[in-house]
Image (cartoon, rainbow, N blue to C red; front, top):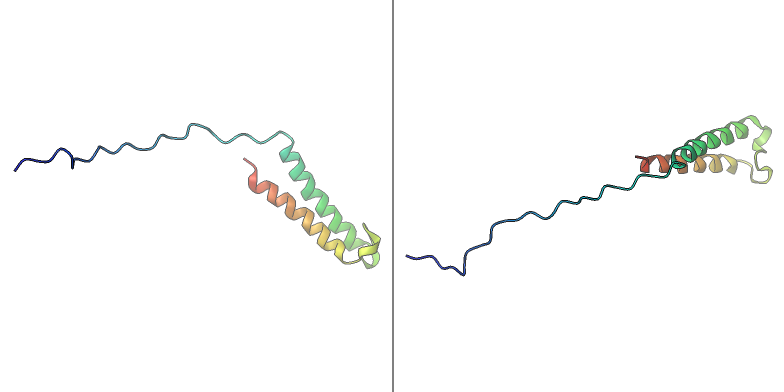
Length: 83
């Protein structure tokens, strides 16, 4: 029995490969990420060593710990994008 020409499937052609590589990050990215991590660590050390967690910001008390950890988390977030 002859085959129908209209039912033939075209051969598979894979989609074109993406030629664009991800853009490199700016030169300031790594120093800023490291600086934030170190600054957050220093913030926590000053908070722990000050009497009653009065410093670096005197009015917020123990929330200075939260500020220090938030700065460190921002540094970690930047490191997750570093290439």
